[in-house]
Length: 512
Image 1 (cartoon, rainbow, N blue to C red):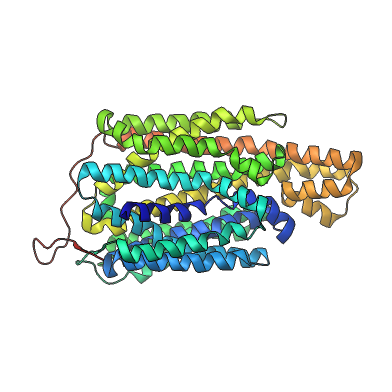
Image 2 (cartoon, rainbow, N blue to C red; image 1 turned 60 degrees about the horizontal axis):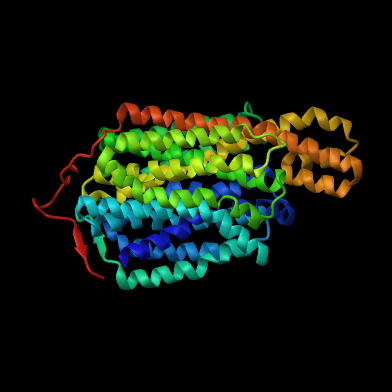
């Protein structure tokens, strides 16, 4: 029952990473959002989610994981309601960020509570396999749920649906979920918290805004260089702090560090790929939001089967070969999608979706088990937060980087070709802002000129889709190198509990 409550709560939080993807064309039409604003509507959730994850995990270790979990669900519900009734892109970006605050408290708590409830290595591996399946399922079925809702209700329904689920999860958690905390936890690391948020946020802002402002823009360069510098200072601060939010010593374990890096790189490719493919299915192939969502189902279906089985395979064959096979399947899927053309069909993309779903399922659960199995139970909150921060940061970077590659190539392709269309400068700006906006203009123009503009815009989109997906495949290839070089094939016993007072004092686990 505890596992069911945790997984359903995790499902709705993970769902919101992708449920919005199929609504992007609607947001272009209803809120007049540009490509950059679309990326921020998607990424504001992930940026805050990732930036606060370590803070929330550390807080759970100190005050109790159950109250942090329940508070996170309630905050998530409130942010979802605000998002549903947003009236502008700026308001929706802010509301999505508030949802990220709640999600950052919910996700690490699910994994740390699970680790404290399932203490046996075999039971924990099985439970984490189911947990990983719920995470991946939420990401993959988001477009289906979003499409179904948009087919029947207004666009705000993709957020409003979260409210009853999150509130129900909070109520059931109060009744069923046991509390736990780390009695040896120290005072909060406020400086580290601020550094993590500023560093990640600045870096992503620069990447997302680069196509519209230019990669050499002083503002963009300052944001990316400054964000990178702050992230570096964060590492230095955490290493020297007497009460670090993130124990840098965890990364001395090859099992921990390689698994965390791999999870982030896999999520980079998955989230970036889904962000692009839902637009391809709607804009290029002409599917409705529901039809596009249903065509993403193969990723979810295969992932749901392979994630729980992957830990069983890792137990027999070892972690390394299972994860490498999974990464190889993801690379093959992305490479196949990168070869799509403006004349492609859904049948051309379908085999690649199966490959991606199987690959993510095989890689995800064994890496998560490697992260949690390499830490003492008392550090489960920070460990699960590090795991979650890697996932969300990787996902946000995937949308930002792959989206920016697509956007830059799209605008570069259109620029010289729009000179042949007698349209005012503001309309040119609208056309270049996104494929959805260009198709809306083409529909308004109508006739042969409108059809020619739509064809040119779709060609521009496809000119960027291939390089963006190739970049995702390259990132996963880097993950395969990390796994081959550093990830141990078999788990080792978790290290002893650090900084215990008094000796022999175990992590507190109390009933509800």
